[in-house]
Image (tube, rainbow, N blue to C red; front, side, top):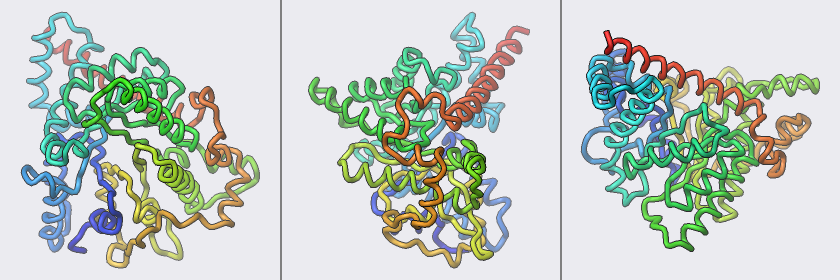
Length: 401
């Protein structure tokens, strides 16, 4: 096992890159312990050192994890991981909020998970001069098309801690919310974003919001904006292969990954050239493809040198920790600026699903809400939220017995 983790080596060649933890910080200790328990005995000492550099109490300036992304599903996982502790917390919430229904209790529980998780990253937030250590708390995915509901929820979540950044979806309604929150100096993370028009719409919405904030003398010292690109959700969940097949085109796994990367790279270039105040965030990453019998990490390799955020869920980090090509993996500095091969782009541009995703004006704002990747992701996230609501309901029933 290499002394330095793959993610550490990627950061070494990428000035400004930040690695974020894509789960609740409340499960970090248990996850580290599980990683050590399943590691080969000969790797445990090295792995222990790697994990201690990712996050540990004290010395926040040395943490590999520079921020956090969460959502209701990940918050429920944090509760599931420590049911005994949370049983007492939930009982207390029910006691303090007599007559609360399951929707109300869900929201109280969700806010409690966000508050406790963001507390863990406050030391980094303060040590970095309020530039890092943010935790992204998502508004209710069931309200992806309701701007008023998203604004109300965003205000509540932002009040929990100064380092809580609000995740707002890339729906038509979401961009008006992002502009309004930015105008008030509230940090945002644009999620459910898959195509270039969404990414640039966010950048421009933030730009307008900042102009309003500055005009009104709003304090922006603790403000930040990131724009998420949900890469494999565009290619896999959104159905790129199926849309290609409709045109008689067969795509390899590698070509699907390159399609996702092409959108990301173009957005990164445009944000840099335009001097925008938002930072790209890469998520929904996958290991692969396999090329000439060797497993690759294109979702990471092709971003070497980028000044971006890369958020990683526990299962993805698990895969990286046992990556078979670890010893031979070398990140090429400034790879982010290398264009996708022309023959691949020519093939992809024959697929309307990709062509529209790659062009700045490929979708109007009104069309975001019908994009298949957005609809399917919103449905998945909403179903997970309902699961947390039902869990809250079971807690109320138990308390009433």
